[in-house]
Length: 199
Ligand code: ATP
Image 1 (cartoon, protein in one colour):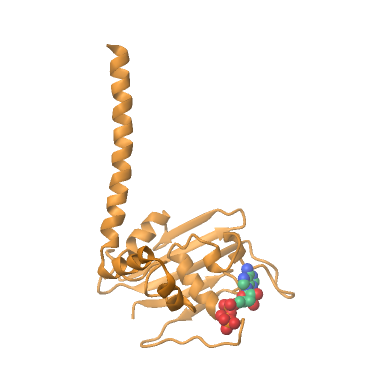
Image 2: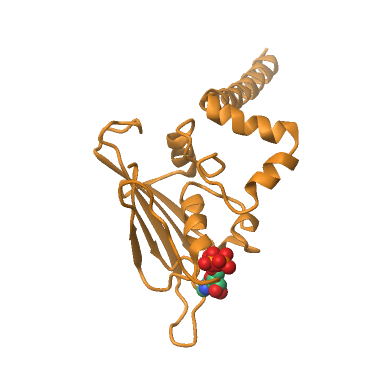
């Protein structure tokens, strides 16, 4: 049991702070249509770094902040925290438990946390690469995903298999290294220009 709890505060229909404890085996979430079941899954994707408001059924990211009901006023911030068991160190961090948090304010400002420390989006995405748990991973199969998978382009399908085979991490690192190399080459070109000017 890796995922222990999902805490939601101000995320979509969760105007009241809510904690969902995941039990051993299978945890099911039941409720009437429109009661917020899909919102829980979207909250998980969101914490793991989802950047597309559309894939969370919104126009802009701030749409996920609880916008109030007739009896409850809107919230100024949405916050979701996932707590994972890490006793077997499946995540490369020296902690028995790892919590991942994300916040968004009405201004659009966003924050990410790993064990309550502020981190960058990149740190969260990198932590989960090749674990099978990530914003686009095969661990989350929403309504219609199988249909989409079958109709997706071969490139998109390959992405899923790459994640499954555990090579996404290396691709990600290569891209990062390529970016650094480009920056270094630009610096080098600038230095060479200066040398020519001085000569
Ligand atoms: P279904 O069984 O029909 O798929 P569901 O239980 O999965 O339903 P969701 O689609 O998760 O339900 O929840 C939709 C509800 O969330 C709607 O009632 C909608 O009004 C509410 N909701 C979405 N965004 C917000 C928001 N920003 N503030 C308040 N409520 C919101």
